Amino acid sequence: MQKDKVINIKRLWNGLSSVRDYVLIDCIGKKRNIVFKYNGEKMTVTWDRLSSSGFWTSKKDHISKYTGKKYRLIDFKFKKDEPESKQEELL
Image (tube, rainbow, N blue to C red; front, side):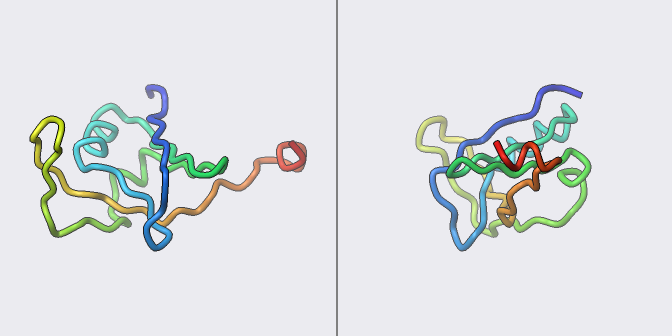
């Protein structure tokens, strides 16, 4: 498995973090997790979860103003990762 794809989020929309569909497809193909970072907190979406359903897709196509490429937004409910141990929680 390759290194995780890190996406820095500037704001949430109704508690949802979004990623473009081609980023998700790329991560599934390369068996990578996606890590969303927001306000010093992080949420990891594992490759297993990416390859299954359980997220929301926009019905509208968007067009990138930089590349002209069409994409849809894939939304995930932002739920921060729980610390693995009490020591990590103290840091």
